[in-house]
Image (cartoon, rainbow, N blue to C red; front, side, top):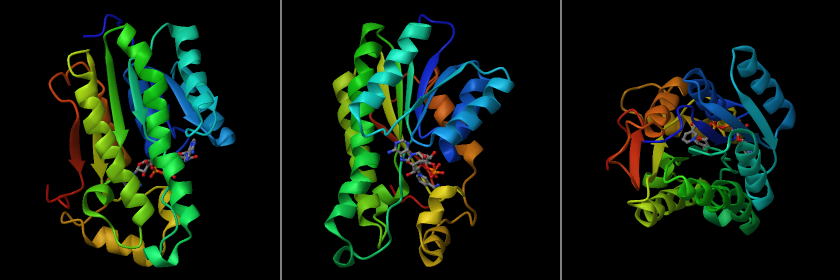
Length: 249
Ligand SMILES: NC(=O)c1ccc[n+]([C@@H]2O[C@H](COP(=O)([O-])OP(=O)(O)OC[C@H]3O[C@@H](n4cnc5c(N)ncnc54)[C@H](O)[C@@H]3O)[C@@H](O)[C@H]2O)c1
C-alpha cells in the first residue's frame, strides 16, 4: 500500500483519446495528474476541463522520447506533490500502413521513438523515485497488434510487442520492491489514431473483434484504474487483454 492517501500519476499522451480518458478517470478518483503531451494546445484545453471539474492537474509539454520531457514530468510532480505513485505510458502513434518492403526504414525509427523509446525513457526516469517510496504502479499501453502482428503495420506491431517484452522484464526487475508493472493490449478504440490508417486497415482490425464492436475509452480507463490501484497487488510483468475476444493468448 502507498503511504500517501492521495496518489500522483504521470499520464503520457494525455491530451486526447485514451490518455485523456485515463486522466479523467484517475482524476475523478482524486488522483493528482501530470498530463504529458507534445500537443500543447490540446493538453491545455483538456487539462482545463479536468480542473473545472475539481481536478488537481499539471501539464508538461514535450516529446515522450526525450529524457528531458520525462525529467520535467517527474520534477513537476515531486516539486508540487512530493512523490509519483502511478505512471501510465500511453503516448503512441500508428504509423504509415504498408507492407515491410514498401516502407522507408526511417518509418520504423519514427514509430519506435514514441512507442518504445518513450516508454523506456519514462520508466527509466520515474522508477527511481518510486523505489525511494517502495511503491509504484506502472501501466503500459501496448496493443493486440503486438500479440498478433497486424499485416501492413510492422513498425506499430513490432514496437507494441517490444512494450510487452519491456513490461515483462521490468516486472521481474522490480519484483518485491512495491513497484508493479503491467501492460494492456487493447483492440480497436475509436480515437484520432485511426486517422493514420487507411479505411481498409481499420476494417481489417474491426472485423477481427469477435464481440462485433470497438472498445470504449471508458472501458480501457477502467482497467487502467484497477491496475494502478492498491487492489492490484499480485500482478506484475503481466499482459491484460482488452480486445473483445480477439486475443488467442
Ligand atoms: N485507439 C486504438 O484503437 C488503440 C488500440 C490499441 C492500443 N492503442 C494505444 O493506445 C494509446 C493511445 O492511443 P489513442 O488511440 O488514444 O491515440 P490518439 O492519437 O487519440 O492520442 C495519442 C496522444 O498521444 C500524443 N502523442 C503522440 N506521440 C507523442 C509523443 N512522441 N510525445 C508526446 N505525446 C505524444 C498525441 O498528441 C495524442 O494526444 C497508444 O499507445 C496506442 O497505440 C490504441
